Image (cartoon, rainbow, N blue to C red; front, side, top):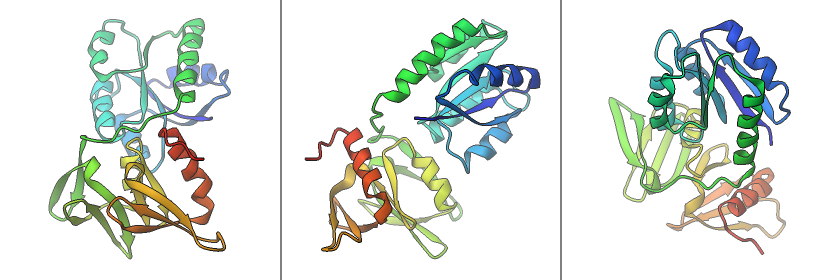
Length: 245
């Protein structure tokens, strides 16, 4: 697989050197480089990233503050801290990074790190679901919801409904932003108008001609599945440990 990667560093020379090093690893797809925390957050709102090389000392906010925010909103993103001061490494361990790289980066040390990265991303990734709470924008404020309670998310016209086991509410933001928010929690964009949690799927059925598919959820709700996504969904379910025979 290609690991979608971004570099955040306020030192352009450091970005250039790291970019050159990453070119030696064909499984890395460098999607973007930015020089501030704000630019990183703006990019993450619209694009999916798997791996982040994050300088601890960036201009507008610290790399540690940015890492904390990313962990809460985009928990699937793996972080490698990059710093010119080894002492900062102790502060960063609370954020469970994959590794720390000290500038100037030794290429042999980099190879060791990237071997570990490749191994981690090759392993089946179990979704992190149940008791995590997440804040969603609603009219006039924020609604805190338990991720495991969400049955599905539906876009109808300009409205996006979050349907839970207890009730439903209208959320702000775009479908793309919500899809990114729940990436890493086992949610899947089954259709242009629906996002569903894998752990609530109990069956996937086709019509008699196999031209259309329907997902049945644990509450009995039936959700359309885009025809071209059936194989992808099957692969994701198998990655969750569901054997398909």
